Image 1 (cartoon, one colour):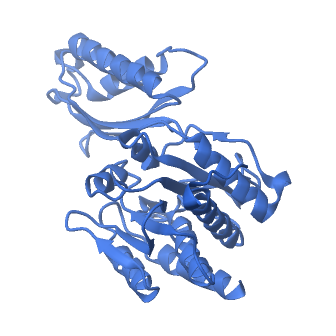
Image 2 (cartoon, one colour):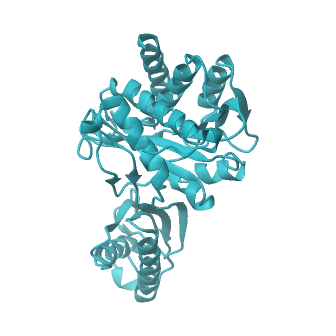
Image 3 (cartoon, one colour):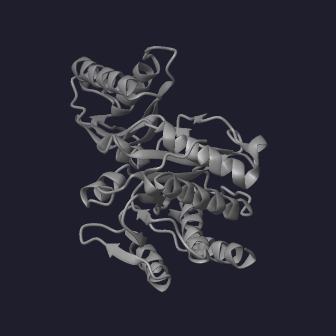
Length: 378
């Protein structure tokens, strides 16, 4: 066990020190591919995207575990760069650790274990890309994992399901003509249009029983000449909703309010939805298997109820595209702080081998559940 723990931490340290952005995980793919080959996995890479999968075993059932690979682009100590501040480096390390655990077993139940290393989760497009590549076509059970911030889950605790919300991101432009600073009456000030957009989005009121939010997360207008009223600007919006239905209502409302702004200020405001992350669809059977795995590894007293969070993850596109898929995502408490996506996010790395052990147990329980067609009870 000590050897496995050391390898998991070595994997983590390497991946943390070599972050790559969405769909640019070229060296990460090569690094993981080399480990999969070394461990005797049947390996598949893709012509159309980064990412890699490895299979161990033969036949049905096919049980799979997915780790996301990409880093974020953010300012760290005054420098913009790729940075693993969402835990994807930890997710990859834990899943690589599963291979170490599985290879040390004297035998495996009948079936195939698939290790999926998926690109571009941060763009909300990686799962859909691997779906198109046929990665889950024959999968019966799919498990994921995500570190949880200390505000949601204490260290040592784990949850068998993360009930993520939906998320959509908008990139937009405000298009009008620049004006002389002394003649504001001749046109529209893009900054004022942007401020009005913030006001209108803050004033959106949907069903208060379903969490939702809209935030402007980027706005750029104007230049070095301070006597020019800018007619053009670019902006970004982050939309969140706990259900897919509420997200649809939120998108429709945003579109209506932007049309109203166009008419009121006589400007053009074209916008593009750059990504779409669906709200969670969790399978009860997979959730029960994960619950049993947590119980066996860390004890029943450390099993937390399914966690509802406004964060999103494109993992849930797999179940939307394949409704028969039995899937859930492990939430792992690890003293993560100050929070996900913080440029200096840290967590207790001793939690990584625990996550590996839970995931390994869940995979084996899922395989045993289907053994000889028998249905195990939990």
